[in-house]
Length: 86
Image 1: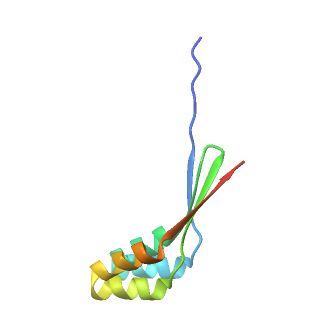
Image 2: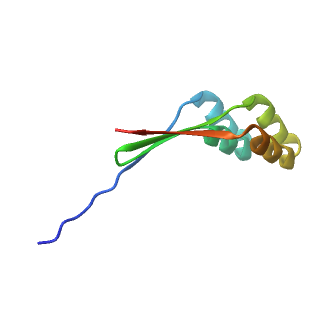
């Protein structure tokens, strides 16, 4: 008898869906940065929350104006990853 292991993945965005959809239509890289900085996903029984500590407005602004500065902001301010095991 073989056992089958099922793995599930649930992804959710915890920011404003209006702005996410707006930036997907207008300029996709800003939408991608917004999505990554307020992401939550659940893999099996573990939930991961990813948050950006800095200003998301300025991060989006620098993605629009000069993309490498946005990477600097991400590296300097950092992303916080919180793990919750159910």
